[in-house]
View 1 (cartoon, rainbow, N blue to C red):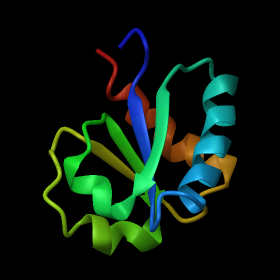
View 2 (view 1 turned 45 degrees about the vertical axis):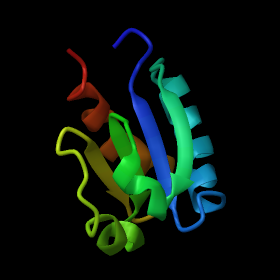
View 3 (view 1 turned 120 degrees about the vertical axis):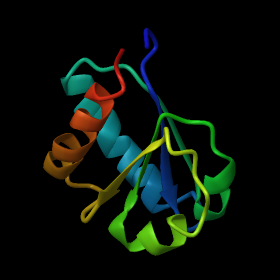
Length: 100
């Protein structure tokens, strides 16, 4: 994982909260010197994603769980998508679990 994991941030339209979460995550990853490719998408795109991790608000869990998602993709749900502490607490272990 020389370039780091691919992480998709998911929200309703793929433009608002997913982008806000992505921007906060960029800061968290930079502070831990972790490289990753970050993208954001709408919840309707989840089924076709080729990624290592999906990050979304807890409120989107029911919608995401309706899709058949590759079981190798880790999913991280956040209660507060702009809370750097929660992002670090939940996302960093998921990233570490992906490193080979």
